[in-house]
Image 1 (cartoon, one colour):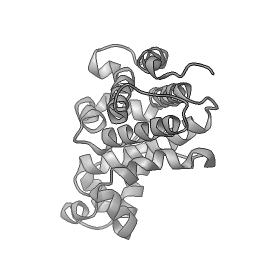
Image 2: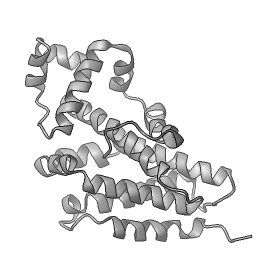
Image 3: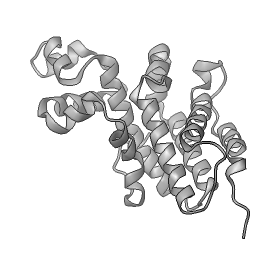
Image 4: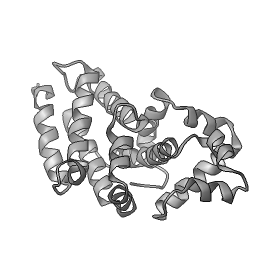
Length: 218
């Protein structure tokens, strides 16, 4: 994952997720300074490889856990927002690095995103420490992380379809969901199937799913 600011070319891509799938915490971060401070501190600790402990985080601001809960919700809600805040610039950077168009762009962006997740040591350390929580926050439909990933992928597909560079026999949302599930399967292969995460295998599977969407050269 890329904690830094994203390149300007793709600044819109990752942020679509939060806009299309807002959460109570994402709204509070924009409107309540105390929620913003707690979120930024939790994000800093996560990147540093530290466990986000709600009691310790509350103590940092001189409040009790109840007050912290009013600011940022429970631990899963806070972790989900931290994780997505890191996914946004990672997606933006992946898109900025890709010059391809059509299905090739979709395949390349998602593959780069998978590779970045696999290569982020602090992220991998966290999912190794808390595998059940990680799968719940990252891959279940109840989590904003998964739903935002689908929304961003749907946006990516719609851009290419609208410009006439690809077509899909499936509804766009359905195709986006399938592509996200493929990406998740290879990103979290160690948690799901006891296998090694593999971006190259993800690329091959994504290419297979996208094959019917490729436009014939004119």
